[in-house]
Length: 441
Image (cartoon, rainbow, N blue to C red):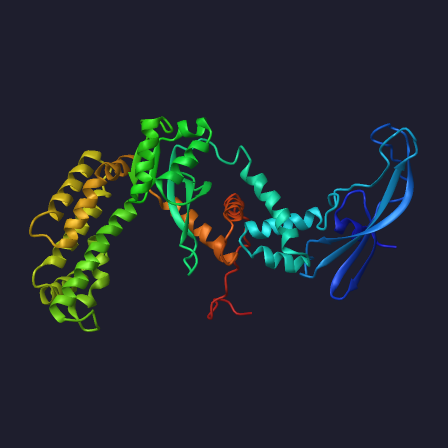
């Protein structure tokens, strides 16, 4: 006879535990419904007759010690005694598992939670449960589709950000494949994921969204990518998005373009003056990190080292001009005044396209002129792609845990399952006592 505490531990209402034993490193739990039950036919309402029991073996979630758990359910079979009723015979049902299932509901939730927390792959969960990959994925797919189809998961999105990430790397037989994530730029919630990173893919995805969602969009934030911008402009012209939607360029990527121009100018000057790439002891190579540091973060010693190295390794002051241009572009995003931001951006463009400026600055000026409206919109609305990049980090974690994807639908469901999971409560860390405690016992 099994104790009542053991039955309560198993946690399945209407079932009693008949035995617990260890079989080949697994915990085998026997359960059944208690006798004396009266069951009626669902079709005719007459009292059903028992036809005995049949043992069904299920896989449950691993126990607290990590060992696999096998459930042996002694399932009762019923039949309707009415000759005119077409119900025939049936087996009893319980909240333990669904009909014709290999996993219990608890095992299915365990596998879905494990993948939602990005703590492993479908294959690793299948190995822990002792079933096939397809069995686990069927359960996880159902949970992910429930999350993806939840109407309350994504509400009105006033600010949406788009950014691409690599789904499958290039190989000898295929090109590199990209996916684009649509993210709520205010909350960081992943709205959806779609194939590609071009204008056609974005237009097609927006056309599939509900009209109320498209009408709620006020700002679209993106990297300086022409495909996204052309798609948003076409959607505004065709009515797919409200005409008042503002397109904003991500400030981080704009400053990054200035840093890249500065780095390329430094490398070119290094090659022209010394005849080789940067080496330890070279003037410009020694300040490569100082050049990318914000001017306000340099202490007097750092400024002195920066200008001394430029005097020795920058004979035509091209690197110094690129550094000044970089700081002018950074100053655009340091003000909340739209007019002042526009003046600073125009000053940076004029400084970069001057005839005596470096070739790298001429290319940068052309990019800034094309994206002038979007850069100013970013300063006026305060919109950036920071939370979109954070969502991309989660997407990369999902891809890394699965060792890559080849099926876009599986990749999308895994992303939405992980992105829809609320952060769990973590155990507070206990402080370690110092080596010299104030009081010693």
